[in-house]
Image (cartoon, rainbow, N blue to C red; front, side, top):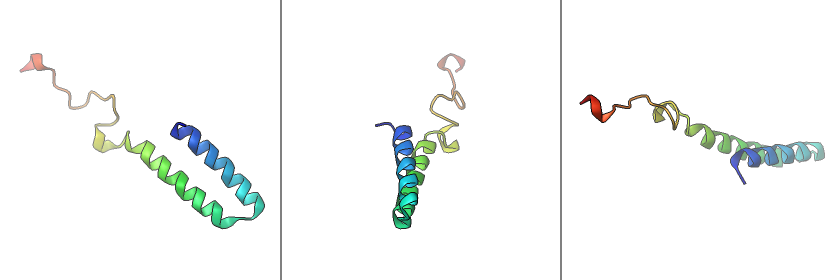
Length: 64
């Protein structure tokens, strides 16, 4: 299951837990969602040259 699908699944579980009044489960699920979102955004973090496909900092060998 991809992380985007996993997040959508967890959001649905949050909705159901909230409807049932299970606020401890809501907190736990929201924490898990936040962890997944952070791991997804780490790929595009500025410490990684603005994304996995960025040409920032790229120096072709022909220019030497």
